[in-house]
Amino acid sequence: MEEQLNKNDTSREEWITANKVATITVTILCSLISAAYLLEVIRKTRTLGYTLIVVALAMIPVVLAHILKAKDPASRYIKSVVGIGYAVMYAFVILTTTNPLVFTYAFPMLIVITLYDDVKYIIRIGVGVIIVNLAAIIGQIATGVITDMAVAEIQGLVVIMIVAYLILVSQTNNRFQKLRSSKMKEQNEKTETLLEEVLEISGRVTETAATLTGEMSTLKESIDSTVDSMEQVTQGTAESADAAQSQLEQTNQISSHISEVEESSKTITTNVGVTSEAVSKGRENIEQMTRLTKEVDSAGKDVASALDTFTKTAAEMNSITDLITSVASQTSLLALNASIEAARAGEAGRGFAVVATEISNLASQTTSATENITGLINQVTSQVGSMVERIETLLKAGEEEGGCAKETADSFNQISESVVQIEHHAKELGGIVTKLSDANAEIVNSIQTASAVTEEVTAHATETLNTSKDNRTIVEKINTLVAELNEEAEKLKAES
Image (cartoon, rainbow, N blue to C red; front, side):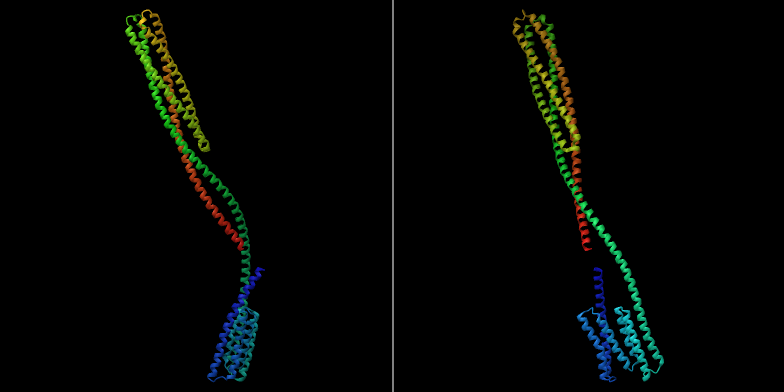
């Protein structure tokens, strides 16, 4: 149906164009012929009556053609009015003229009627022109207008040849037009087939674009989630790095306090050595105690003073161990926070979680060692207190020293035993302090390793975050392109 409508539209346009050109050409041709005859009237070579008949026969088809064209530019009657009306005028002129060249008036009109591409119409008009020309030639020979038979033969042959050639050309054009129509039909069929394939592909593209849009939306949601997670990881690792730095500072403080404890331990050992030597000397000189009462009293006071110093040192050690215990507790708390942050970081924080666990274990060992140190210090303090009490008793009994030599000897024996124990515990304290120093060094190394790992995790997290943001931008661009592709496919389907 649509093809038929298109064909009808094309046919109407062709008729409009042919009628327009035919009307213009016949108007010009008939106007020129009328003007030529009126000029002959002016020159008095033609009568007015004859000229008016020629002008009327020439202009009637022109006027009718313009009227029909005004009513309907595609009117089929214009072809008949132009051809037949001009043929009537031509027949009258050629049959009544005395000019043998008037037969040439037919040639322009024969060319004009080829516009309608109607071979039968051209044959009818052409045969009529040949018959009229043959009749005119016979009449002109009979009246003596043509005296040379060669002129008559040329006129007849020219008209016949022109008509024959016009018919042949029209038929050939029709064949060409049919060939072009056939090829155009084949091309249209190929175009329709191609259009159907394009529409089918467009449909598949639309479906694929819709599916791709859904997948890209899912991918965008996943990337958005990744970006949010990486932002949290970046924030968490930054907090972990800060916590590790704080832990490192506190651990350095622990190292400082351990150094102080180590110095105090050395002082205790030195003092214990001095005490041991003093006790040995007192044991050797016990027999001279009576004579050396004043010296013993002085030595006892020195011992009391040394033990008092030792007591103060022990008190300082207790304060130091309390501080170590507090720092170890804070270390455990920071290790717990680091474990929590590592759990939040997921796979990227697994290594940091191991480091945090190791730090927690080292903090526990530090706490245990500190408790042992505290116990030893308490024992030393208790024993020193006992020694102080003994020495005070010894000093009180100095005046009765002569009669209490045996008791003094026993007291020195107890002092000797206590000094041995103090020396033993002092050595243990030195060993524990050394272990505590080593453990603290390991803690420092672990914290430094954890800090490095945290920095590396932060760098990777930042890089992953930036990559995820870039991927999100790319996905948004792809979504835009897919949407545009989908719109173009829909337009193509709608236009088809």
